[in-house]
Image (cartoon, rainbow, N blue to C red):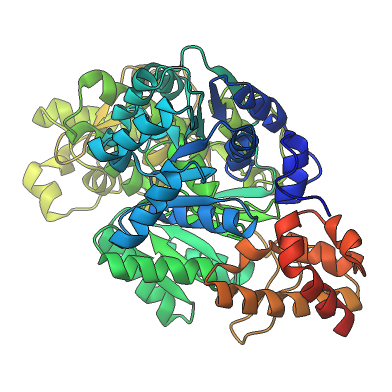
Length: 625
């Protein structure tokens, strides 16, 4: 069995340390670039193997005597997961963050300064302190600062969906340690964000690597809100009973209410948002990472850097701010490459709220214009009649063909000629401005269109408008759908504190009958899908979940025995089970039933350290089934 310290060839490191026989996609080219001392900017989707792009060069350069690689990481959870996985693989790595006691932090600093660490993880705010920079100075002076990896690099951009001001100071690393190669990595960055990353991190000489943004294992579904809690519960029970997943809500209050409601419905649901006590957040996150079948209801404060591979769904009960945010959040599903779902319910109120937040923000006008354009792109995705995946990838300048797997491909939406309904709504908005000199909100508009003599209608004299009652034959919910789609199409905008409706320039052509308006017909829920080809089901009664690949009866028994063994090891080492071995690795062991260490070493995901630590125990487990 080869020593993990023996080879510095990247492909040998990939096999010996991580147990994989070949690089995927752009990984090999990125690794070569960084190993040779060049800068790189890497755009690679969640689950695409970004970590290996800097971990393999870090090991190779350390073995060549070039010292430690500093990893800039924004979240404690990410640091813990990455270091835990590297430790299991036999790679000397550590993190410095607020969870460490003083003695432990000082021990790690000594290891760092002695050049014994291969990778050190730290947050940008710690890295930029004088004490930390002094340690880096010492390493650099002795030629022991090997490289800098800047993870979640989109955080440096004010145009991005997750701007973090502390990232702006990271340009000092280039100024201070010129010649030390840097690799910046992110899963999402449109053209504006990409340019910002290059400028703010001084990566003008970096080689750009852009992988496909396609996540073919994720099925995208977007539904019109109609009692969204019931819609969510139906989705969870019919599609993902017992699966781990994330439900995103916009507000902290909604997070807590939704988590409590799901728990009351018998699901293992927990809340997570920045307003919770840090200890509570940590406990809930640990439950989600370590236990099976936990549903985390969260604001976007949760998710970045979560390495849990078997998240089977991500659901949105509120509209995200833009496509980058939507892509980043949905990308947390199915990191293991197995089938997963991205499900979202959205309605007119979501559109109005998002526009209001942009308009009422304190940002400059050019920034607001860009944010409106980004929101418009997301609305176009939500209201699309054609393939969701084609629309999503087109946003990132990637051409594709219909996927055959999203809701629109599987159940093509019916459309209707909504030109006349659109003209009625637009005319009513126009009459408001003629009659009162200002506009009104969606609720009042619908009341006037439907001929409802409410107190407000009578008080304003709107029963005398020519548009009063012209839409009486159309239900309120249908009018909400018309207005939502008119906003998404750009013919109507919301204004001011009270979200009054106003016409845009393009509305004139619609009013004159020059532009047809095709609208989606509100869809009934699609027929329940069979789950055998999707995520593996489990029940709240504790029945075991099937393996991620088909196995014969003996293979299933071996898989369950291996999972039981893995759970014991994970508890003993205080690690999430997937850090010991992924389900896919256990499934391959169960299918192949290796009877020797050499045979076990050929299983994908079994590196030299894990083979040495667990190999004989795994063979024992397999032989006892």
